[in-house]
Image (cartoon, rainbow, N blue to C red; front, side, top):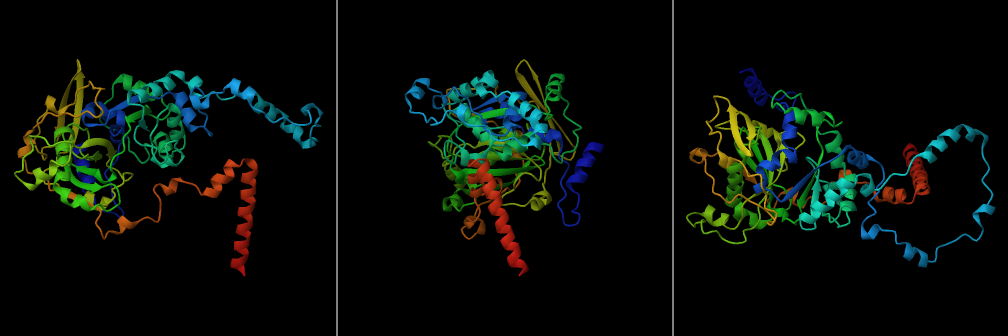
Length: 478
C-alpha cells in the first residue's frame, strides 16, 4: 500500500535541523475542517446554526476599503422630515461668488484621471447591492433568537470585537453588525486569501461534478459560506481543545489561560465528557485520522437518573452536561496547541492506531459510513446508522443534542490514557496580562485617531513621526 507507507513515513519522520516535521497537509484536510462540511453530520451535538453560501459580490464587498452599511435599519434611515426641522449651517457667502482656486499648468495632464474618478458610480449599500443575501442574513439572525455569532468557513472575527456595536463580543443583532465585524477582521481575510497556504495537492476524496463545478467558479478555490450561530456567553473556564491522532484522543487542553481552582476536581468529568463525544460521534465518521476539535462543556442543569455514584468519575460527570462540538481544526502548524507543543503531540505513541479515511455516501437521505484503514489499525464496524446525525433540526430548541446512548464495540477496547492540561496556580501563563488578546491584529491608538481625522490628520501624524525619528537618529549619533 504505497499511500499508507507514505503516511507512516511522514508520521514517523525525524526532526531536521531542530525543526518539527509535519505530515503533509492536503487541501482536502482543510476542506474537511470547513464548518459547512462537518456541521450537517454532527449538528445534533452543535450549537444551533445557519449556513449561508456567499456570492462573489459579497466577497468583493468584504475586501473593499471602507465600511458601507445597509440603509434599511432604523438607525441608518434618512428622515427627511427631521432634516427639514434642523437648522443646517449655511455659508454667509453664496458658493457661486467664491472664486475658483488657481490651476497649475501641470494639472492639465491629470484632467482625464479626475474625470474618470468623478464618473465612477457611487457604491451601493448592501441591501441594494445584494438584497437577497442581505435579507437572508437578517432572517437567519431572527430565526436564531435575534442574536447570532458570525464566522466564515473556518474562522470567527474575534480579533474585531473592538469595533463591534456590542462591546467586546461577536454578538450580531442585524446584518450591519455582521458586515462591520467581517470587514474589520484579519482572521476573515486569512480565510478568503490564505486558507490553503503550505498545502499539498489532494490525492483522495473524489468530489461530485456539481461540487467541483461550484468550486471552479470561485476564485478562492472553495465555496465561501457565512455561518451564523445562536449567540450565548460561554464560561471561558469550560472551553477545551482536544487532539486526535490516528483516531485516538490523546490530549485535552484548557483554552482560557487563567487559573480556575474548581477545574481540578472536574478533571475526570472533563476527560469523560470529551471522550464520550469523540467515541460516539467523531472517531469513525470524520474523514481524517488526525485532527483537532474544540468543545464547550456546560454545567448540568439537572442530574440524570442514569448517572450513578459508583465512582468518583460518575459523581463528577453529573456536574457537567454533554460536551458541545464548537469547531474542528486541521492537524497542522497553524492550529494553536495552547498548553501543549506540537513536538510532543507528534511524538506521542498511540497503542492502537487506526490509519485511514471515512467515506460517506448518501442515498434517499440515509447516510452510510464506510471506513478504509490499514491492517495495523484496530478493526472498526462500518455502516452503523447510530454513528451519523439526522438531517432534520428542531428549531424550537436552543441547542440540539443526540440524547441516545450510542454504544460501539470500541467501548470494550483499551482506552488511550488522555492527558488533560490545566493552567496551574503557579503557571506563568495564568498571569500573562502584559499583552492583550489578538494584539498583533490591532493598531496604535494614535494611528487610529489620525485616520479618523481625515487626510489632514494622517499628514500631520506622518510629519510628527518623521520629526521623532530624526530626533532619535540625532540622539543616537551624538
